[in-house]
Length: 303
Ligand code: BDR
Ligand code: CA
Image (tube, rainbow, N blue to C red):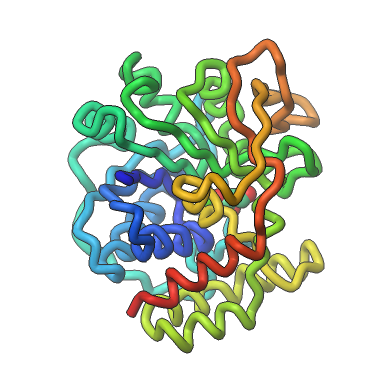
């Protein structure tokens, strides 16, 4: 399966990219980057670093620096650290970005790989909304869009109502849900049932010294956030769960509903069912232990 991950790496983004590199069903043809966990130039640097570390020769196309209609953005430093990788801050600049913007690259790849390309968006949906606007055929050209975002039937994480990716650009998210391609929504409803604990990272590092060791090192900061803020012993495999949903839909239970995003007020960023909207497939249950095992099995095979 040909895959582009639209990402803001980001600790769990790095895990998802490592998983995609290790999964035999996935051909990772490129990454597009967006603001979110970090500033977009940090997302791009981190994405290029990860591809190099994984030995993948694929482009990184840089996307939106801020949300649609907004001119400010504060990265989630308290969650992902000052450079996106927790306490690891000496991340080298490797190579350079693709000449196309993220939206242009997505549109181009969707044309070239018409009907075959899956786009997995694991950051704010700004680039996806831009691609849908740029090419009216983009929605039909991609096989499907799989989104890590939203908290449809459960509380949010960045506010009591909103999940972080949707909260960071509610207008873009609402634009996508108003006129969606074939879409699967992998929100907190399922990603908080795939907790990865410190001992899991230690086991991963034993088997995969380089990549697993790197993920263990960057995760310490993330695990501390989950413990301090949520009292949880592990972190959600948010973005990895979305990548796994691209190839293992049978591990998920989905409901069909339209979605609307609250664009202002105290509930800004809330994703709520809206029967008047086109249907998307919302994951409401998951084989969480199966996702954790699959992640470990695949990533452990990396050097
Ligand atoms: C999502 O927000 C980001 O912090 C993570 O990388 C993930 O994509 C979880 O709400
Ligand atoms: Ca992310």
